[in-house]
Image 1: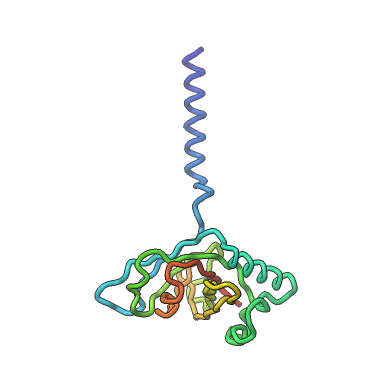
Image 2 (image 1 turned 120 degrees about the vertical axis):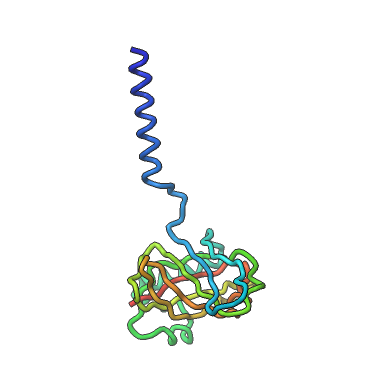
Length: 182
C-alpha cells in the first residue's frame, strides 16, 4: 500500500512539473528586443533593449495616454507638433512600455535597427509608427518624443531604424517605446 501511495504521489508531482513547464513562467516578459547596425560596419556595438518597470515619469505618461484613449483620442497625449507628424489614419496604440538600452551605447556611431517584439503581433509588411519618448533627466523638463517608421516582420515583431542621436540622448536611461498603427 505504501508503495502504491508513493507511486501515485510521484506521478502527481511529475504531472505538476510537466504542466508548470508547459505553461511557462509568468515572470518572463512577452516582449523582447534586439539592436543591430542599420548599415554594414566592421564592428557592431553590443547593445540590447530590455523592458523595465515604469519610472515615475513613464508611469505618468502612460496614464496620460490611457486618459486620452478614454476621452476618444489617444494621440491627444502627444504635443501638437509631434502629433502632426503621425500620418493620417494611424490612431491606435496597443502598448506603451518603459525600456532601457543595455551595453556599450557610447560605441553606437551609426543608425541602428531595433527589432522589438511586443505583446501585440504586427503583420509582415505592416507599416507602423514607432514612438520613442526620451524621459526628462532634469526637474520640470518634458518628454522629448521621436517618431520613426517601422515595419512588421514575419514573427509579429517590428523593425525600426533609430538614429544614433537617440542612442546618444538616451544612453542607458529609461525611455518609452510604443507603436502607433492604423
